[in-house]
Image 1 (spheres, rainbow, N blue to C red):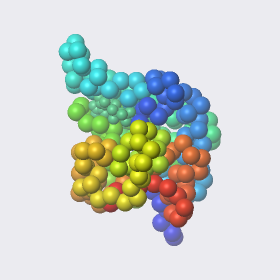
Image 2: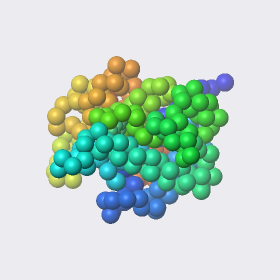
Image 3: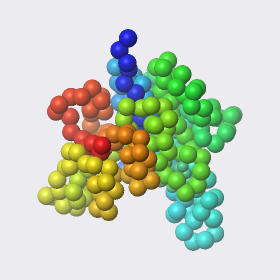
Image 4: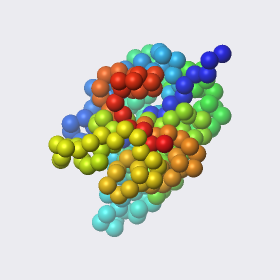
Length: 238
Ligand code: UDP
């Protein structure tokens, strides 16, 4: 039997907010659900991690000293659960079978993360959304995504963004910014390159997990990258 590809797709909470910058834009959630459905239809096993920055980030919540950082981070992790539920609904609406597993137990709302159970869902062709980050403060959802990708033996982690990949300078500010096709983990940790935070890159490096950075908002892009289309545009950290 041919081994199916397994991927972990990570996108930020801000991606869900669309142009408003806050909350959840249902048209965006619907678009992403369609893109994920294409992966499932093509026999790709999909895990998803969504950030929470469209609702609350721990650091910002704690900035004036009223809310403790750890509490801010708890609020941030709960934000990712809200986003995950929205994504679950949109996926179910398009006919995709999906489960949410939270790192923090909330049994009235979703399953708790159990690695073996997540593996079984994936083998059965169900999408699994990993919510509530790592369950610990002081981490990011990029680190949570890398951790889950390693735990489920994902072939790659896909950091899905609104740009085509990693540039040598900010493409929104500089016209002469160049897309970097391939980077080493060490290069990805350099200060001017904002792929993911250093903790997540170090974790990926220690476990030889390739990081793909790509544009999620081009229709069909995720599928062509995973299927190895030679015209697909993205950056890879390996
Ligand atoms: N968070 C946390 N532990 C984790 C993952 C996330 O405490 O393992 C909190 C943290 O406060 C973070 C927030 O959840 O700011 C939202 O996650 P993140 O900032 O990574 O979201 P994104 O920027 O991807 O939308």
